[in-house]
Image (cartoon, rainbow, N blue to C red; front, side):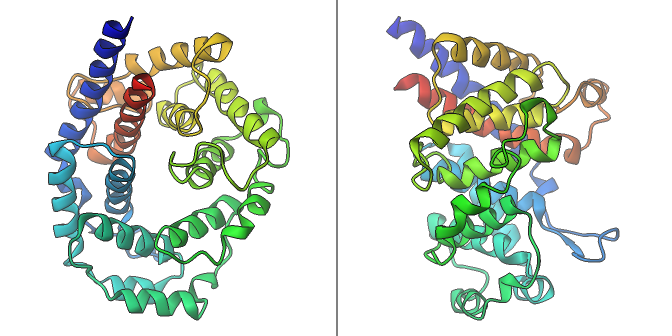
Amino acid sequence: MKYWNRIVRRRDLSIATKGLEWLWANREGFRIQESIDDVDMPWNTKPLIELMFLMSVLRRNGFDDPSINRLSDYAADVAKDFDWHQMAAYDPSAATALALALKFYQLTGKPLPFEESYFQYLAEVRFFEGMDRLPYRQMDLAHSLAVVGIRDYEAYLAAWFANTAFGRGQHPARYSVGDLYSLTHAVFYLTDVGLQPDAPCLDLATNLRMRRALIHQAAIVARGDNLDILGELLLCYLMCDGNLTGREGQIFDAALQRLQAGQCDDGSLPPTRAITEKAKSGKAVFTDLYHTTLVSVLFFSFLSKAKQS
């Protein structure tokens, strides 16, 4: 059995590594582009920030792969030429991007492309509070600031979580895609991206209900056509140390097979059947594939870790 587990674990790591190789081969897609469609945010920093998030989560959880180092170096090189000061002055929603970039640079040991004192000043004068956010986005802000040492908002995490679809006790079948993302992102923050599987700000009963909600939603979503949210649900189930045996384990394995069936030979993971067909014909573009591939890399990395323990 231990021999079989080692084989399975190597296979999971191989899938994660192939995903990292796809990200490296398509790294130009992470360059910051001018956005002509979004007047509120004229720069599209989202792909780069999400790449930094991926690199930071992998590093914080002890994963090691040559592709992590070279992708980190690439992200740092792209980010150093961007005017982060201007973005921060333009929109308070830049708080999360700045905090994630700050943490990323702290982990890599590379020179920060903006002054940390500038970021600290914006936090101290409450500049980042100058906009309305959905509850899970408030949690996003709180966690992002906390990981760089600003813990002013952490006391409100449980209250914000109580105002999400999960916190309101919404029936599982009535979750929208947005509701599902509010659950998965909240789990990222509550568990500190898997470093605290039992969310410290929640009581035991709520932690257990959260795990059940994740696996039940995975069972529902696996029957649909959205591998991006399915991957996030399974990833979060691992982050909060969900049970991989019994009925929950059977649901997890069935959802896992659904995810594996969607994987392309080049390491990318198309989120839908329509995009899978585009990928097969060579017509899928970077924006079609990158986010679900990021999720896939994280999920299969965490899965290999779960099977090792």
